[in-house]
Image 1 (cartoon, rainbow, N blue to C red):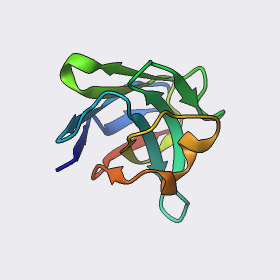
Image 2 (spheres, rainbow, N blue to C red):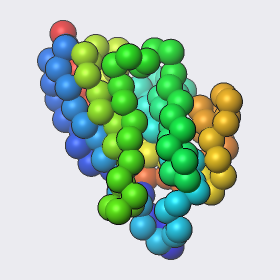
Image 3 (tube, rainbow, N blue to C red):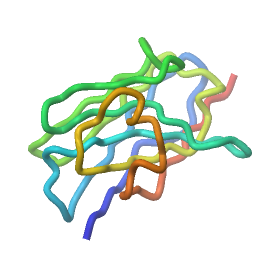
Length: 127
């Protein structure tokens, strides 16, 4: 059974940092597109970043480029999202997702393309 468990959310002031973790289990971790999404109240789920665990290619939304970094630890079956220079508009529930194909182009940011999801972790950034 595929399981994705996010952790690391919290409340920070603008300009602060958080590191989110997504621990994967129940499937072959390698060769998956692992994505981070976020959803604020009343808004659609937005693709933030993704990494292909089979090769390490990374993808970022324009809104987070230069501030967020996605990385992986294959020994721990874990993907991380380092979030720096946080802004109030980054406030949202953050979700981890997985799909057993390479990430590609703009596909990584499409929520419907992923079949496996975690429960989410809340990030709140105050001004």
